[in-house]
Amino acid sequence: MESKVHSHGIASDSSRILILDYGSQYTQLIARRVREAGVYSEIHSHDIPAKTIASFGAAGIILSGGPESVAAEDAPGVSDAVISAGVPLLGICYGMQALATKLGGEVRGSDHREFGYAEVSLIVDNPLLGDITSEDKKLKVWMSHGDRVEALPDGFKQIASSNNAPIAGMADVQNQIYGVQFHPEVTHTENGQLIIERFVHEICGCPGYWTPKNIINEHIERVRDKVGTEHVLLGLSGGVDSSVVAALLHAAIGDQLICVFVDNGLLRLNEGDQVMETFAEHLGVNVIRVNAEDKFLSALDGEEDPEKKRKIIGRNFIEVFEEQASILNDIQWLAQGTIYPDVIESAGASTGKAHVIKSHHNVGGLPETMHLKLIEPLRDLFKDEVRKIGVELGLSHQLVDRHPFPGPGLGVRILGSVKKEYADLLRRADDIFISELREQGLYDKVSQAFAVFLPIKSVGVMGDGRRYDYVIALRAVETIDFMTARWAHLPYDFLDHISRRIINEIEGISRVTYDISGKPPATIEWE
Image (cartoon, rainbow, N blue to C red; front, side, top):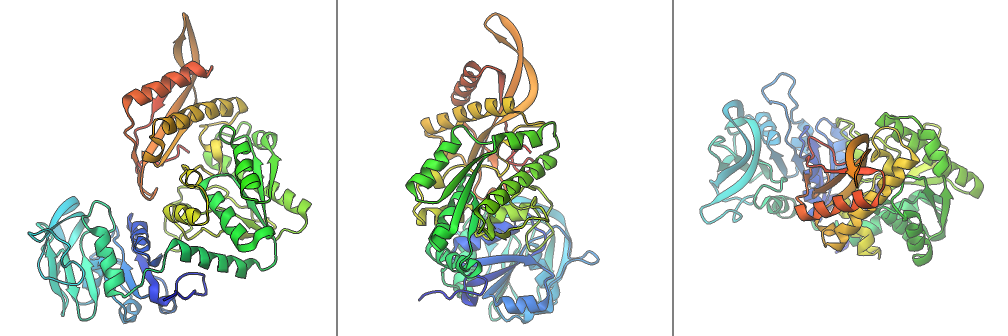
């Protein structure tokens, strides 16, 4: 059976899950887990209008966790529209407590909070949790709560318990309403993905239509409907996101796509030549190369504020694109490789409640006077989805699995003021780091790796002389979704080798450090 295409270019009602966000740090993980199950999901604020819930036409609704207490004054609740939607409901953590309160149960603050690992026991066999526990009917889960459900609403049964949450799960099987106090979306929860799959497939009846092939077909149709016979200009960086956008748009509109590769002086070593070889020579995409190093570095001269640097870089990108569009004289659209985490971290998600973490030309820095219409084909996709459709479109694994590279390039990996001298030093150091990761078989074992230039001088000894030279910081992280990350535990001997190569081969560098900060509290990038 083939999926139908929704008016927004996504799967039809029969295969859509609505996620209501109550402010949890894990809400985006819920969306990813649902999509990993082959089902399209969207995140909306918990207080969206009733008409939006009705028009969404979801097969099921998931209520996220959140930082509030349901007992607090003006605590976010569950709307009548959610209950009357007549579709299966799953409340997670705060979502379960809010459902219990809405339906006549009782929630109270607990004397013993649960944060981190916990063990729950299956009380009653049920469609959500049945047959996924160990032989002793135990399940290791991830908890993060202070309140707990003390009394169940009418018609509900207790389906799980923990030491500090006697009602760690509840179910009204007849009306298909479920709640769990733990977080199945977090990878630390044993069989968490299976719980999500149980809900969306077996309880909600969603088929697994959200596959790379169907994503491509639906997005191609969306692009064709939007663009028509008009021409599109794409800023091609050579990174994963812009590369997949190029392949997708080329498949959708062919020669209507013109790519502009801007060599802004903030790229990795030899990146310009590699981009042209890959896309212009091998894939047959129309690519125009613009040497704009002087323009960008002049505009950045003396600016140290990270946000201002991003705005400057974004503005100059757009100026270059618009210049090229005027030369070409038949361009109506500007395409960008914005993806869902960019939108989330730029407070651009439909909830509008996220803190601004990133703000660059892809999502936060477009000028109000831009004369081109904007198209962002990957805006609703996570990074892993982008990679999968890239492979499906025929891009090489080496290109698709390339580590992310920020839109502002080395401009946000040079702390403080950006100078050509700094960029040249950083390019060489970064190339040594990345090439050695590949050589030692470590590149694909980390999610992102790069070097950072620190505009400070540290004492060093070269030969018999004392000198003050600059510092390079190395960063490598492991992550699934880029929403959270841990620093990569690279071998000491490897780091020692990298340090010696950088210091010995690059005049002007006297010290190399390794960043062991996780996300949170740090971000993956330094600026």
